Length: 320
Image (cartoon, rainbow, N blue to C red; front, side, top):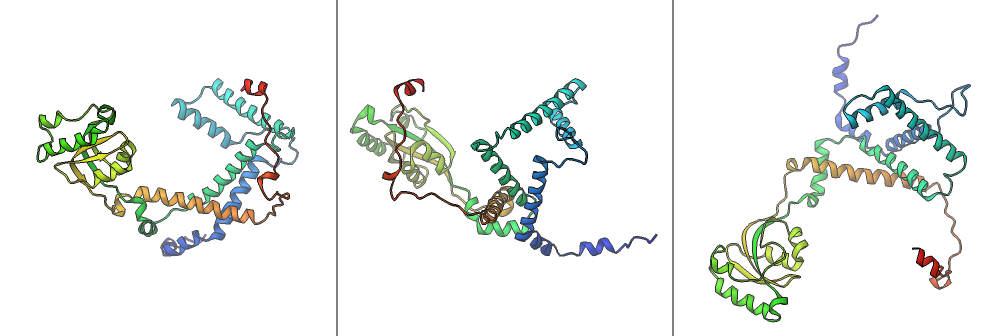
């Protein structure tokens, strides 16, 4: 017996990492992996019978048993009893029996829900091809540099507001806000004088560490833009929102910034993988779509040539 070559592991380690990365990204390899996945799926849904096996035989594999056992243990944090495991087996058998009987009756034909589910499974298989590839940090950093705007951190602001209600004051609301601003100029935000102005407000009087999107969600985009452009440390306004008029006092403002790659590395990897799945599915579908010719009926030049939708009768409307 020849002794193992001690240099072999070192030689294997010398395979260029970038060459392996390029090989894993080859479209041909993706299609081969997709084909293997589809072949495995076909064998799962339409298993070949062993020589001499009856068409009515339902055979559970060790993987089936392990999957049931693992699922029960994850749900209940313990192993199933013999009785519980027997029920799981019977449930699995019932599922397979009903599936085979439904297929034998043709219930899978012309069923929109079944078609959508099978199409969805096929899409998942194609996307799993992309998930099998593990990107390196250099590749992710390059992708981050090309998509940096997706990870920009928004500015944040902390402010308080005094509300002047058009419902309470009518057209005088804006003028009252201006008069209050003239009085409050150079006044501290915490003075009793500031608290004496304004009307009761259904939301908050103070908002801490909010992004432009969060402010716009509550007050509208015009208000958010004005507040993020206001100076800090003094009362500003009047600023209009969907509720009425406001005076605002900005306590602090932190401008938005572009984070370093290391700060958002996990998010970058997640976004990269999502994009790879979309691209893998698009390529796989394009390849499958190219095999088919679509034949459409002769369509009218306008909707006027289409049949009118049926009008529900009184009985039909009453039953809805």
